[in-house]
Picture 1 (cartoon, rainbow, N blue to C red):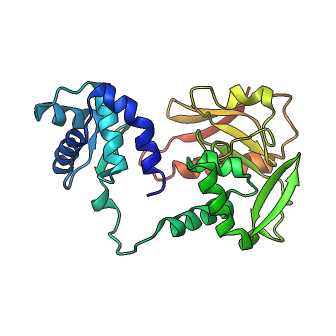
Picture 2: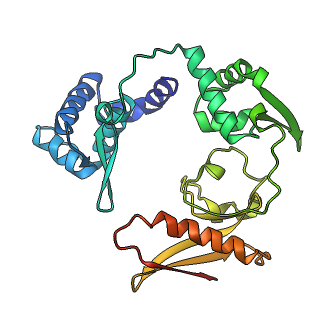
Length: 275
């Protein structure tokens, strides 16, 4: 409701270049909806469906067709088919609701959820994460102003939701974060947790984020996994000299990775090593 108009505006030039008119998108949405009834299909399978319907669409065109289908609330992520993501009908995956929200209420809910789960954060962080205008984000922050505390650090104003008042993580923490984790991707300025010289090791200029090691609030390295001879191997590569991390924390981080694969029918054994 809030971001769709801005995303569609940003896509207009691409749509014009590809010949994607409103009538065209309405037609492809209908084709996709019929194909996905009680079913989940990969992007390639949906491309084949679209082509069989008489539409000559290459991969780039199909990508934009599917983006519109997502923006219009036709599709959402379906189950994995092997290593490939599928699409499913949104109406079959998400329960219908009769709730109606106006723009002001939507802005309130978005700001509430962001700052309660991502604070401390700045106005610029909220703009980056939400994709909304700075004016809309300021208005949203004002809607929950009574619930926010403010702190100034390094000349930047941070907002903290009052639900975090009195809470202080004093215990050391080690986490192996996946690629595109919210801890990094949700903020415009990441220098508080990751020195600028190490940014290319955590994400590139094309918007790809890598798995990283989080230790006591700071990003200190990368990690990766590989499967060899039915054994999962975790490799840790630190940006600088390895800090003195308690063995217990490393074991806990390993156990979290192990638990992730626990549900797999053929779960390999787990080993960890450092570079």
